[in-house]
Image 1: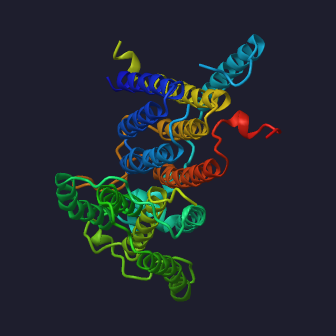
Image 2: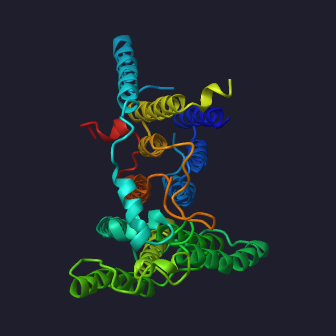
Length: 79
Length: 235
Length: 125
């Protein structure tokens, strides 16, 4: 059962990452990147590493996405 | 999708072929490791039973590899210095719209709860998953909540600089005291009994160092987010 | 089918192939995108793929997390704590370098007004 869950989460992360790179607007791209970070938190929890999962949840889905959003605010939406 | 340049068919097929070869090679290599070799992690787990704390990852980060944590704090300091150099200016650009009453009241109610949770994760880092890095970033996210909901809020610059400086200095001072007392940089000079494992006051200097790391990381993250949000548009 | 995926060799193959595919997705984005922020995002995706590979390769289904709880006697039959400590450090450093790179991109845009990497690296004004 666990092996099947690992396989499906991996497939989900790869599809979300590929569509995050090939979007036209920058705002959609940043939100899909947050989805990649969330999927990796679930995988770290399944692999029995609670410290790493907590760090990735706080930094990846919190501060790292905020940095990209601030870049979007200052750069404008040009392409 | 528009590609950067015209990628010909041979380049793309070469890329796909080399990618599949690397994946196959890594699979064969990494799945045939013999089972009964000795690992560093097993020896460190055995050593943790006599001179560590209940959370084995905290012992490895702070005590067995404490010098690497000092280097990581140096890297964070240099990054914060670079961001402050490029984005800081005397003219502050505040947010353009005043938030309404509900947002202000809700964020003022949530801010002490987030700070309390961050301090809890930081102080109990040696007994449950957590520690200095996680607690410090949680505190910085509480400050971020106040920054984006109030128009005129600002973290005072001199106070934060003072806190960060003293946290950095005391890390090195504790290491030097260990060098003087025990002939070992970052040695454990406070009492550390095996029978205390699992209590809050155990482990010698390990919780103290992690709290210092958490204070430094939290204040640096607050300064980075404030510099990114309130950068002026006219300079 | 569920019993087939629970064997340790199959889990190792799934982890290696999955994280290497995510790494090559990030590399594809690094080579073909034009906007500066999307290039930074591709580098962050490549870093996440490597962290998944490190933690996934030492996963044993019968071992426990490396934290001592109430009904255990000693530190036996636990996972390896050394790679977890290193990945913790690497996550924080990756975030700090990303913040510095994004601040450089913001300053460059304020100075010249370009975010397209073809226009930045061309020799003509």
